[in-house]
Every structure is written in C-alpha cells, then in structure tokens.
Length: 331
Image (cartoon, rainbow, N blue to C red; front, top):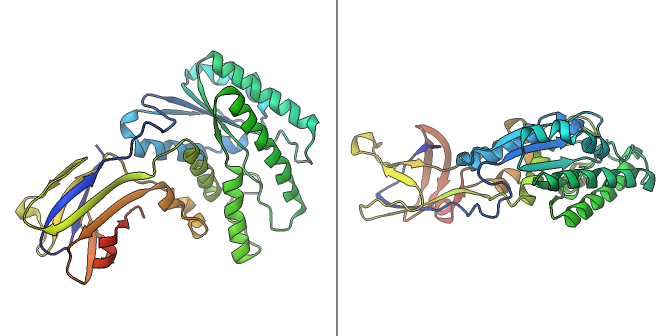
C-alpha cells in the first residue's frame, strides 16, 4: 500500500471525503501485463522506457507489471522484424511497443526507397505479434531538434511522413497508435516562439535527454489513455466528524495531532511521478499537472494562509480561497 500522511494547519473539525480513483478499464495496460519496449538507440537509452514503467507502476502498483527493453542502436523496422523471435518472444510479452523510423529514413528527404522497406518491416512485426497474441502500441518517431534554423531539421518532414505510415499500420492491424511527433514538436515550437534560439529536449539532436524523453513517455501514455487522476481529497471544516470514501483514510488519535491543526493519515492507492532530471521541460509544458492530478480541496476555512505539511515537513502554503477552489499537490 502506498501511503502518505498529511498534516494540515486548519481551524476546526473536518469532514473528509476521498474521490475514488478514475476507472482503469480504458488504460491500455492491464493487470499482469509483460511489456516489451522495442526500438533503436533512442529506446536503448532506457529513459523513456523507464519513465513508462515508473509512471505505470506508481499509478497501478497492484498490477505487477513487468517491463523489458530490447532497443538496439542503429536498428530499423526490418531489423526489429528479423530479431523478433530472438529478442521479443522469450519474454512472453502480452504488450509490445514499437518505435522505429529515425534510422529508417536514412536522414534524407522522403523517398519510397526507404519508406517501403520501413512499412514492410512494421508489417512483419505486426504479423508476428498477432500470431503470438501480443497487443501492440505503434509509436511514431519523435522529431529531431537541432539548433533553430539548421538545415538538418528538414529531416522532420521525412519523419512526419513515416509517422503517417505508423498510423496506417496501427489501423490496419488493430493496434494502438501513439503520436509523439506532433506533441513533441509543438513544445519545441512554443519554446522557440518565446525564447528564439534554444534547445530544450537535452541530449543531442537525435537522442533526447531526460526532458525530451519525458515528453516521449507522456505522449505514449496519453495515447494509452493513462488516467490523469492519482487521487483527490475534499475536506470540509464543520461538525466534529470524520468520514472517508473511496480509500483508506483515518483520523489520527488526539495525542498525534498538532495543536491548532487538522491531521489525518491518507493511504493512497497511487502516487504522482515526474522524473526530477526532466524538470527543465516544465518551463514549456504543464506536463507535471497533465500527468498527475493529486488534488486537495478544503472548504469552510476562516480567511487566511494555511500550511500543508507532509510527514511533518512543510510542502506548500495556500490561502483559504485557493484551498476552497482546489489545489494540485503533485509538485
């Protein structure tokens, strides 16, 4: 059980209600899934794949998910198809994510000479996955990010068309389509519009660092219908009573409460997550909030400022009006 104890300096007694977690029925990953993450050197970096795993594990700790990374530097869809039996099947996966295209386009203008083999390789993977009863999430390549204005960024026109091919394969084979190209490029463009010549995704032009790979993981999870809601608590200051709905939540004994405050122990079924090393990207996108709704709403407070303490440590301060409207504690 993931557990966090919150201590709030509030006035009066409280009525506590905890909204139940959002239904997980629509999330692509299911309890007991074994997920193989296949791709090229970008996958082999074990960044976005780790973020996929940690986000999923912290949101669904009871699912007992297993992740395996089989990325290989320099690989293409044809290579992935050729090594499917060796690298994928031994893990007995129920889910496969496929992210090829960066090398398949040969860093050149779009051409059927590179696109046709790319599509053939993806279809070969699809055929083998269907035969093994594996659910597949088909992922587009992300854009390259050179310095603004660099001629090499014209390769993004090729990658975008290869992404169209990924969508075609997903639709043809009944798989999940995950577009990371357009959300990723939109964030880059927003940063450029605001700051001009700046690179924001880290790493090099082809291999993003943590900020870019967090964008990748978030785009894939959003396509998988990853639930935004972690949990949400609503507190009403009023008659002396304590009630919890949707989760284990207990009032602390009188001798454990802080004078002048309201204290309770909140046993969450899930916790928010964001990779600390990727926080630079938050200047350009509200990714933390988009992926983690960890809410607290307190009504009936007297006018003033209130501290929120987690495990005895101050983590935030809000006005009575902010708390009445509701705040996100994910950060």
